[in-house]
Image 1 (cartoon, rainbow, N blue to C red):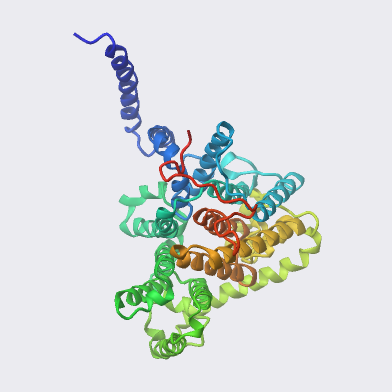
Image 2: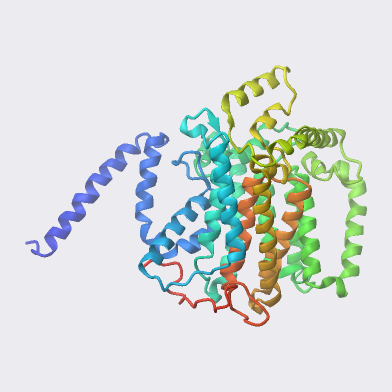
Length: 510
């Protein structure tokens, strides 16, 4: 006979589980429909609530650079931004209930970000508003606003907790390595229609270049981004000195192999950014003052000499990545790269004179979906120039233009102040941080500096690059427990010591 105390509990369990099982079984009859995936996703999310409450801060760090999309939300935002919103909500709830819980205050970074958020919000209100194709609006561009606000929210969520010292290396490694997930998109497309269901969780646009590439020039964007994330991990974990350690030759072989693999995307930026990061980190590690300088110079010269006779024998996507170098590459690869370069120059030539027009009030991210569709159809019929749709969408392929045209001088001021403050924070943590985080802090600073140079002078997109910038500086603050200084060591910018949070309590909500 059932116990009188346990009977109600059993009834509650069966009363909940049986209808839920029936519902899931019914939905799995049509597993690929949007309603089925949404409901099953929400049920799975509910089951993960205890894990989210316990590890939301760690999940934020791990998913920030991951190539996952939340398919059941409008616009399919990235998983990192969704986790950031959930994490910040839990942090604010926790602070409301426990006011003594510490927060890593860095006003010099927080204030410019808040100013930037205000400038974006006011501009959106006064210009074309925030519309979204996923919401059925005629004005598109909401996803870019989501990226900007998500980047700012992600920063505040990331600095809400200090990462325990014993987990700092692990968290930093997972922050970088999560980008390897980009390879799934290329693998799913190459595997055939039977694996296309993976595009529900992974962005399909990464496989677009593979799908539209000609057979003779197969461009693998996912492979490229995954390889870049992997060799970034090696720079963070071992540094250039450790990679070049001849007693462990597998490191140098692995690093060079990943660099070569990154060229299969056909992106010149993969080479340029890689060279910038390595150059800056080489300088920050002080290797220019050591015996490493001459072997590295000779190695670079030897690599260039080997490329001269081999360039035309490489895959066309690799040749396209190297086309900016004085090498004899296939005319098809050089023409394709040169065409896109001239296309960008033409866009910049047309857009630059419009800066005074949007100096005080930017045009925002919103644009007419109808105009964009008509422009694309006209381009297909040869009635418009190839850059007409890009001018409408505002994707100008240059960092400063994608900031000052949409948000005017106010966006430029906010981003400039954020960039300067972030450089100061990253440099302070690099200079005065713990010895155990020396290589991590060196890589974070080198990556930020290299990416900022590339964003300002070569290519960038404000809404997507801001996610990277806020993630790097937010991770640095979280790992170091604030901003390190020569006098206070582990003290934050406000002058008080960073609060100690037990490892068992980090990332929890009481």
